[in-house]
Amino acid sequence: MARLGKGLRAYPRLTVGLALLGVLVALSLLAPWLSGHNPTAQHLTAVFKGPSSVYPLGTDQLGRDLLSRALYGGRLALAVAIGAIVGSLVIGVVLGIVSGYLGRITDSVIMRTMDGVMVFPELVLALFIIYALGASFWTVVAAITVVNVPRFARVVRAQVLSLREREFIASCVVAGASTPRILFRHLLPNVVDVMVVQAALTGGVAIFTAASLSFLGLGLPPPTPNWGGMLREGYSYLQVSPLLALIPGCFIFAAMLSFNLIGDGLRDLFDPRVGPKRKGSGWRRRGGRRYGPWRGSLVRPPC
Image (cartoon, rainbow, N blue to C red; front, side, top):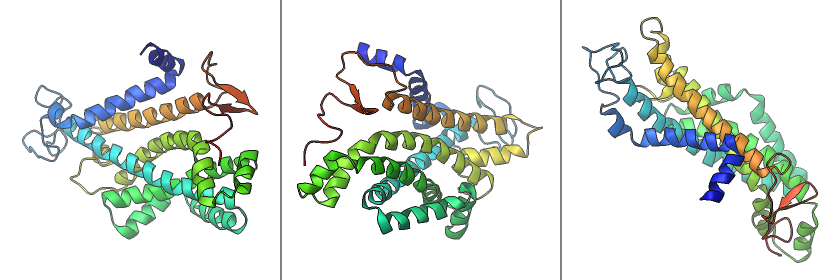
């Protein structure tokens, strides 16, 4: 535990990001016990109520409890973020590894496709996808996944391009290792660092995109509680009750900040030029990259 605490203190941004995200996850999971109200239940005799013992954060224009809607909206936002991270990571990493290792026509086709996706502004492309498929949880996840796949594909491809010329890859080819074995046994472990960093940063992008879609009216339909929808409703009543927009805005800010801090902290952790020096841990540098104490080379065991 002492070593763990020392390691966390060495990366304050990672520590703060994990703590903030942990708080948001805990609040979302404990929503039924913390709020005590149905997030969609309307109380027309209690509209625009201020904070009180019954409604800790007040109520909206329909008398719905703002705390319960914010907490349940956090569940939805985090679920969208996780779904988008997993989908874009799996698809983008596979495309990036295949493109970087095979090269030639395969690389050209995949990268030109990724460039075509990136030509469109992310929000515009997501809006088009949802407009074509209809607004639902899975279409929102699919839209955010599509716009984030090129990010993973490009960073993984760049890493693989530098790895495929290494001696250990040439030795595997000479030894008769199959292409799938080289891709997923030897190349994949060496792109884990960029994958993890990009995944953390994608979480913040997913939160923002989902909120933007709901704010524009193409997210999850009401009365489903979500931060973007709450912000959209609160925008119309800023002068009457600023809390309607302030509360979901603060939750969106906190969620995006946590993912961005985690991404920056992981980048510091994986980059030997940025992170603190490790004494007696068996780590050493070679050619600007890190080698673990369990590895004799850059990657996994011999072919």
